[in-house]
Amino acid sequence: MNPVEQTSVSQAPHAAPVPDATAGAVPDAEIRALLTSLDGQRRHVLGILDGLGPDDLRRPVLPSGWTCLGLVQHLALDVERFWFRAVLTGDEAVRRDLAGTGDAWQVDPGLPVADVLERYRAETRLADEAVRARTADTPLAWWPHDLFGAPHLHTLRDVLLHVITETACHAGHLDAARELVDGRRWLVLT
Image (cartoon, rainbow, N blue to C red; front, top):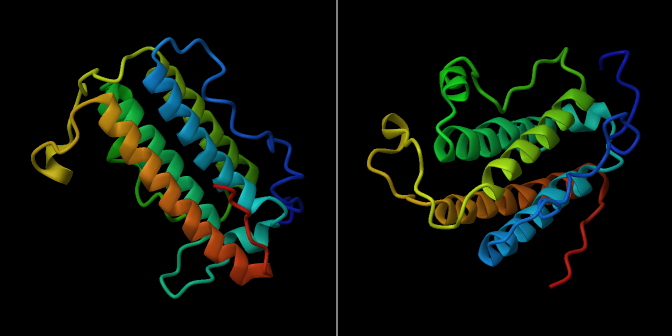
C-alpha cells in the first residue's frame, strides 16, 4: 500500500458524491429522466465502495483479476469520457488521447485512490455538461469504426441508454466484489 494512502473512500478528501446530473437546467424531460437514472447508477458505484480502504480497493477478489479501483477508472475513461466526450461531442483532444490511455482497468500503483475517484466525478460532470446542452435526438459527432464497425448507436438517447446499462452492470460487479471483501451489500429499493 502507498504509505500516503491511509483513508477509505468516505474519508478521502475528494469523497463528495457524484454531483446531481439534473442540477442544471435540463429543459428536455426525456434527457432529465435519463440523467436521473444514470445519476442513480453513478451514486451506486461510489456508494458500494464507501468505507473500503486503499488495500481493498486495489485487491482483486474475482478470478478475472480486476479491482474495484480499476473498474472505477474504466468507468471514468472508457465509459463517461469515451461515450460522451469522444463519441457524442467529437472532442478532438479526447479522441487523440484515446490511443495513449492504455488499459483503463489497470491503475498505476502510485496513483492515489482519491485521484481515481475524483477523475470519475470530474468525467461525470463533463459528461453531464455535454448532455444538458443537447436533445435526445442529437446525432453523434464521431463513431469509432475501428472498434465497433458500423454504428449501432446513433443519438444521444442511444448513448445514454448504453451508458446507463453499462454503469448498472458494473455497479452489480462492484456489489459482488464488495460482498466478497467484507460481506456488505448495497440495498436497492425498486
